[in-house]
Length: 169
Image (cartoon, rainbow, N blue to C red):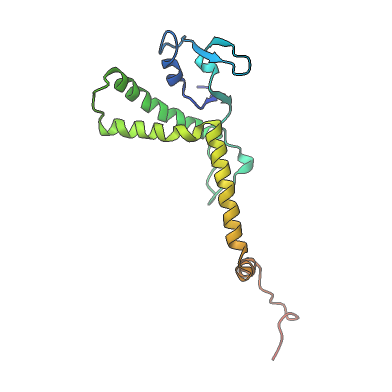
């Protein structure tokens, strides 16, 4: 199976539910060009996704404890598994609105719903901004105590043990 190139932040199975005819693989969804106001039919495969959007960049990563780095498409694969688990649950709930879901189905649905907010471009930007703010606050905390900074810098420094450096008594 080939790697996904377009990573969808709105899963295709959800987009197809809004298509005409609904849910079919060859369905078309309405696409509105906000700039021109033009409305046209489009394949869900071409909408709400970006090229390698979730791809991990190993240049930005380092190994921990000698373990291998995850596959570059690991996040996309994980989201795909979560979607695959949730799709039939959503289908069943839509088909039988009053039906009570089983615990296992609720877990699958919860996993899916919990990914939706942070998998969009805006959601990822919000996470990046939160991460930057946490780093800023941590740096303020660490560097606000000069003695703590000196102790931290001294921890990794080798001790001098040469005879010229040691004073005799």
